[in-house]
Length: 174
Image (cartoon, one colour):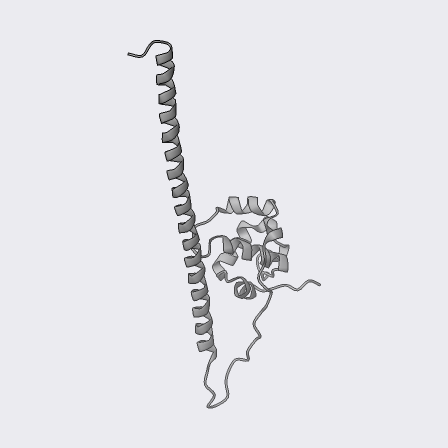
């Protein structure tokens, strides 16, 4: 029997929020296993393939909220985009026993905050890297536009000169 993952485990693996996972399991229902969108009253269970799809979808817009639409993502999936996608490792955190011994400090909340801060920092770095790449790409495109405008100006001047020479040769030059 194939291993399945709970929504909380999928959230941990993919970095997607539980709300996003619920949303994705409806929007991408036709691409997911039956367990990802079970009948009412049954708990969701995701296969490794489901987790890969959710990680892919989540990664399309997680850093900026700007990205392809769900229709475009579905087209990408239909075009086998998942074949080239490196899915996150399917690592689920160990279950830590609840409670503590007398005199023992509680570090689970601190660990959770630390982990959350680490994830936020990774997202910020990823966002800044994407922003930098976009800025570089826009700068490159602006340079290319400038070069094309210059070439257009040169071509226009050449056409004007050829038309003037043509009029001169036909004796139409005034």
